[in-house]
Length: 429
Image (cartoon, rainbow, N blue to C red; front, side, top):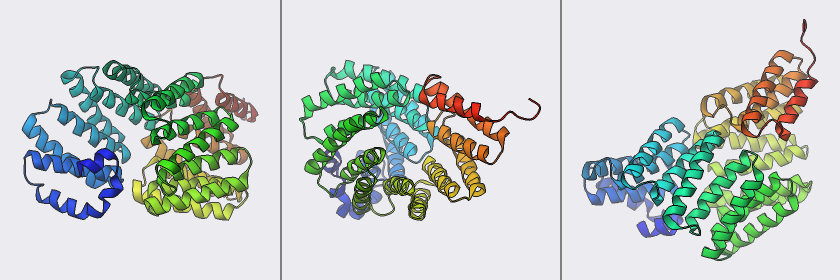
């Protein structure tokens, strides 16, 4: 089991999974090294394949055994705390995830010191948690600390340094610091090519990250080339039917859509969806992502009925796989509201947007960009319906988010200033 986990061959364990669970369950009541190891390895496998609740249960049992054998301040204890935190994060239980991740980091700082790979890993885990919640400034601080830690521990050209640079580059992109983001991502690519060769799957990941940045910079030709390079590597290294290959096809489809090449974009997005369904199963959350993106293209092409079918299926998948409180469910409501508004069902669209906003207010950081999207959409719809007071309130909240995350001079902030200026004066003002 460990050999498959360390090599990343999660699918190689699939035929043995029932037997492995039976063996691990038979040892579950014991409090020894064998039971801890079995629970940890099975937890690793289940987490990799997305079976989160059982993964959490096996990690939790391994933690109980390891704490009993080695104490609470042992590096193995911290690793299990970190793993449970990652599972909780994947389940959108962000507050509880943070508690576990902070415990892991505190142990590692006391026992291993700041400049240890495990410490750097926990710093990156906390950064990813805050990034998922939309706290990009907080995430940046953890990623910067993690980068310093891993460089001190392993040197400036280690592949793990590239991982930290990639994380930092992505969050800087979200903060609008695209020049520094580009420097981080290009340095990550250089390190990976020097240490792993030019055809390793992690090289494809680096090109994929750069492609997203180039698209954000509106350099669509560069984005297209980067995603084409990522696709070529993944097809050679992983095969044409791998989920990562589907991701590259999806990215190419999104760039082609932005270039206005809707027909080619649909071909890529439909291929990506088909591969993802075969590789991951029809009810996997990533299939929901593919459905959502294809729905956006169909909406852009005027096929509102087809887009609605795909969006409703994505919403059902996310609610079943991730729970109704997951941010993806708010995204589906937001996109469905766009379809409803386009079909003239504006009152129902407002209801969907208010539901999405209520969910996001509960689970996301107050400055998350998804909140800004929902508030902007709701403000514009309320403005169309003549509700100037609530529209203004939505725009003001949106503006505060943009000023905090990307700055008052950003294109996003300028757009909201213009929306506020377009509102008629309220009676008596």
